[in-house]
Length: 409
Image 1 (cartoon, rainbow, N blue to C red):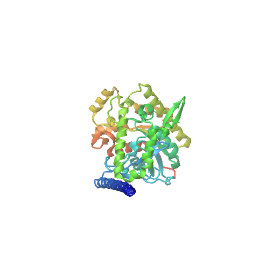
Image 2: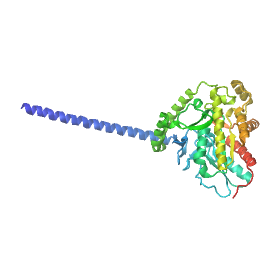
Image 3: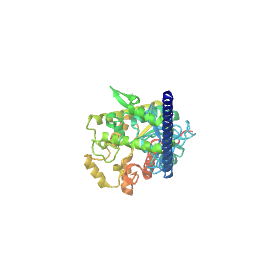
């Protein structure tokens, strides 16, 4: 009888454990279903209210970051222009390796001003140059837009070496954003470790690709490469990615705090002055060295090289009193130190340079128009449609003078 009681208790214990495990499995299954249902509801709500933050860039072992081939969508926070990246990572339509007969082909290199996610593609500066220059030359013109947001001159040189030449351009045109390109080319000023830099090793400017081994680059690769499909197709993951991006952006801004008070987030006012610290002197030395390498690269290919300096909002504001207050704040005599310095470099090295800021500043005051706009705020941020149109018209007229004549059939 005792053995029977013990056996019964053992059986009851086994059955109890099984029931507990069954109950736990059931609870976990219900929990998983609840999470999935919650995710599905969030996904549906985000789609219904039109919230989307599509991702257009991922990591790249050569330039650090590049456009995702074939990415497309509209950005909820940037005015909803439709953005398409072609199969070779350029914003815009597919491009044949060989230009159509009789076409003057321009390879346009630059950063977010050339990428121009803020405006529809037909309104971008590259497209304006293409249309206007074709009219002036009396022959077809094609502008291939290699611009990527956040690029410094170092990444543009790498793009030229590894991506541009297969398209056999008739001209390489580099756009320099004076407000941050010089500082972006030097790690101690940019303070980012997940991109390549050029550094001087004695008299030689050499490539530093140590970013490939950094933790930040590996983490970014995990998110952008391995989870790319999920982020591309899930609005919820896009929202999470946007939160992550904003967090990292705040960290970078806090790390870069401490310089001359800025007129605009993301731009460095120190570049408006002759360099007074070892860091800024080296940043200018590296930047000018990279531009020499670009010019030499083009010379080896037998392709003309030209440079255009872009504008920043304070340079082309229609309000003279605001310019004067800015000059007094930073202790500068005028707004064009980097423009003059790069023009001098072009004269020494033998390539043409167009400075947009002085002429666009005159237009802004005369027409009482703003060329820069960030959402509803005028005078800051990237170019608006008026800025792209004005810059494109000036660049086209300049190129028509520098490179006259019809393209060779």
